[in-house]
Length: 503
Picture 1 (cartoon, helix red, strand yellow):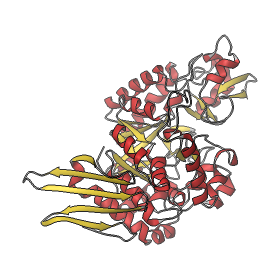
Picture 2: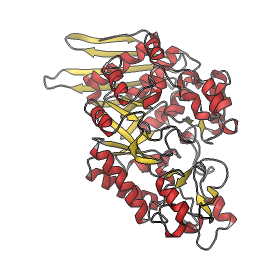
Picture 3: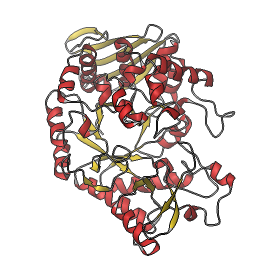
């Protein structure tokens, strides 16, 4: 994976076009910004019950976006990451429709997970309450198959997303076929979506168990054999994230988004500095993704709250959520928790720019912190354009996360690229991609608790030092950048006041 900033985007929501048009955008106004692109699900169809995360056919590109040739062409320009939706597939998939019609006689009878496959002797109340849930309710849906049989199918997320038995030969064959299809198209990075829930076991919490780690190990080994790196997507207690990072190629730094907000809201870098000292460096740093802003990632362990505290105290975590609601003018409250369907209990739905009250200086300081931490930065498409909450889309869909999934027209992109905050962010991205200091060593410089001073330093073959230094005052919500410039003595200071800059 290149040590350059990556873009995370839906193909059809950034310019409303297809893969070829996205490629033209990356070659045009976004040229030089991104070393890689994470294409959010582009499979058939992109407009199911969960914005593409419930594929009918995971090996078919939605025809409205292009085909595998379009994907392969894009990989010639940038590294491309794709999702492998490990845990489930659509109830409209050919496999499920055949199973529904034929039941136990279907060739796919073992592909879909039923309650009795995990609890052959039945489940007690204690068994069901032990299952870790990202959403309210039990993880089952009563389904009457087309052949008249009634089944309790395992549905971790929505009734339309039927969980796969990834340990069954049919499940393993299904996932292996997806990997081969992606490899043939030139994709060299995959994100394992919802993999933490993939293994189910009676009497256990069914989330990130030893058996889950074993499954990830085997899947990653298979991917590696095809030349594919694996990113594991897990929202969980921060120490568990550290453990996961020791076993895989890449993890997300999901603790970073709420910790940066906490620092800017409370005027302290103390929790952030603690996290920087212990966080895994094989991480993709993010402030925003297609999901909400996670709070579980810095909170106490839900399974052991008394003995496993979070990175911030519970009362500050609660206050952080309320401050996001306040900064967004109450909009995030309308999209979060029980206020909207398809809810996740551990996320606040809001664009990152609106979570900071549309404060340009604070937003750029947050992005600078993201870019300065070890790892590979990813920028979500609405974040690239300092996007506002889409309340109209939320009202139409009723899906909380749609507040941060705006459909940008080409005219909107052109207009937003002229905004000073966006131009400054693009300058910051180019600096992160090109300055040689970021290929060297990282350190946190001594500073008071309200200050965060980060530095990268690299020596070249001629004995010259390349330096990139970031100083953030969390209490003032402002940042300064000092960088070395070839052929110029000392460091040049760059403004992060919302104006573009170059070196």
